[in-house]
Length: 360
Ligand code: GDD
Ligand code: MG
Image 1: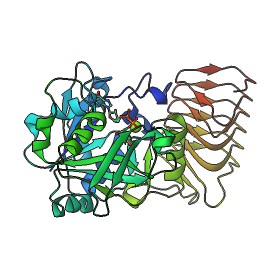
Image 2: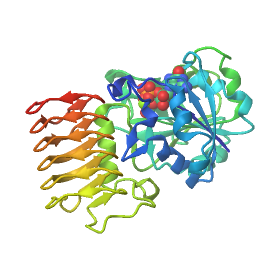
Image 3: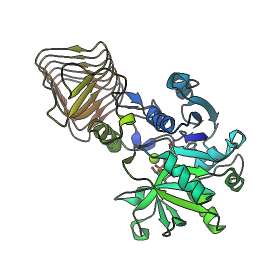
């Protein structure tokens, strides 16, 4: 079975972190985000993946190549200008041999693909949409179904007065190849605003399947941080936890240090229920305090007496002595000056320099 992953978006809601790197390559607990989707696919025996690129395509090839290192077989289909979600899928028509999967490239979930594919087959569906339940459906595609799962309406980004259900499009689909005939070739087209409403108009067999369990679209800075906190809090199923294959540090279960990490004296690790991850080659100074769930990328330096709580620090960043970070994301290659404070909601762009005693 083939899986197509849509990764051409510019990730504007995740700026500044997506200015230099596309959203699916942003590290999530020190692994490129897309690797989590590869893990889910592999867990269900799916290794053939087409990546539909548009924004910063070279970076994907550089990081994943042909996928062999990850046990995947990857190919790339590039759009010179973004064709939208539908146009991107249509672009892959030549590679499709039978029913296939499509994923949005920014969804973190442990979706049971085997059950999803079975539901698709059992209902003799032409297209199936994985669904999840959320509190605020206005940010998503609202999907209403009948009791037998048949989709009754699909409304992308509804307004509050249009909301009649809390089930939304979870960004994973199964398609029979013949639905591709409904998407114009080489044109900009949206699955959500074009294909799905058209399938309903034509009374074709479009079904929804509710995917139980964890689900998150990592499309905003707040959600990107929350996805880290959730993984570190153990909310995701085992193959999606970050410590697979990596040796836990003997210093205790509430921390996981990578290779060649230098640890100073009297570091305070999180209390029970928290976890601090420190990436390869980083160093943590004396008297540093970690609390809650913290992820430090590879090659970072955390200065003496700094305090980090529920936050993410991307690679090669230096956090000065006595600095304090809380519920924030600090990008790669930053300098956070001594005794600076980055408070809740802070997002420090990669390469930033904060002088000593700054407050953000
Ligand atoms: N190749 C390609 N070309 N990919 C694209 C393009 C394009 O022109 N436009 C968007 N994508 C990719 C993005 O990179 C992302 O992985 C995915 O398609 C979805 O785009 P988003 O921009 O993240 O959409 P959204 O989050 O507002 O809404 C979508 O996802 C929701 C679930 O998170 C919709 O599918 C909603 O219906 C859905 O509920
Ligand atoms: Mg999204």
